[in-house]
Length: 400
Image 1 (cartoon, rainbow, N blue to C red):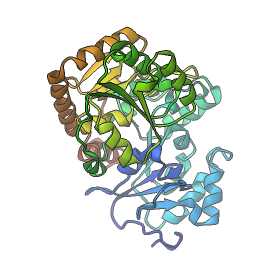
Image 2: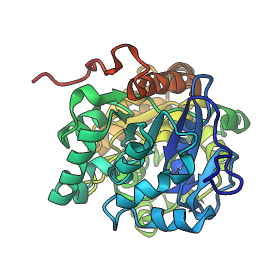
Image 3: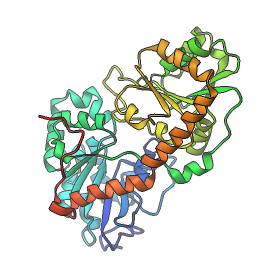
Image 4: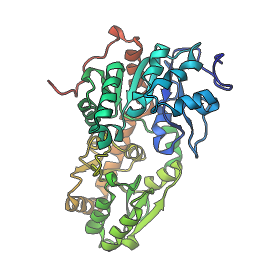
């Protein structure tokens, strides 16, 4: 334990990465915990303000709330314009990380001082709202904050090429951008394998918010399969739009064919999705500009379980969806979604082939091992361990 570290904080004695987030164990940010686990080449710790209400603390998690001065410094990050981030460096002085990897753009913009104080390379990951919502994209104040971040960061990670383009549009130099696919939680998903439901089950899963486009999915189900007695629609998740979506189902005449599972713990959530014959992902841009940016992690993990998909052409969904295990459609064309569901309903052999392709694609491109390999390469660049200590141009970068 470092002499300045709170009791219980065990810091690595080999090359390591300090990950940073806001809340530890936040259910909707599970992929951050997955990416902050130690690898053979880099040990790791995850720093957060405090534990999320339903979080179960892992041994490698460090909570600023464990000590009053660190808690105050973390809470003051935005009010201080990032100045308090230098105080967060105190526990790590005797065993500084090689890299500080901050998850989400806004938090990264106020933690540049943490990396600089520790002499560590700074990596920032953008995930969606932080590069798409109007409050960030159109705000001169946030554009200035991001510009300063991009000047000081050594690498920026995006989960797909469309997300990388959005971050580049905010001012990030393309040579600093790296596309790293998100990982599926392979270990937890082993407990989620389930036999398919009877009949033909379609599934919408995620938060019930505008950008998910669940109203399109409900209407497509009603038009395409409303007259098929063996077809049902499962909606897993909760959110502010549930009353409105229930009205959509009632107006479309399928209220008795839609099952509302509500919010579920991860294993129950994925087990319910895994019983579906097809997953629907009609994501789109919300009125406030919020979009997937990349793609829902639920899509990745459903494919891992062998659930084929119908996805919108929005952001990085086509990049994440298995080419032979998915159908890509406009998010606004309800009739096309309805016709696709009719076609899949009458083609069980095709659905089985798509399921196998989805499973194979997810395991080839979204395994934890592949994600670790790609992130470690980014850390080599950020820490100066890579040959030349600078990033090469990325293939998706737009020509000048």
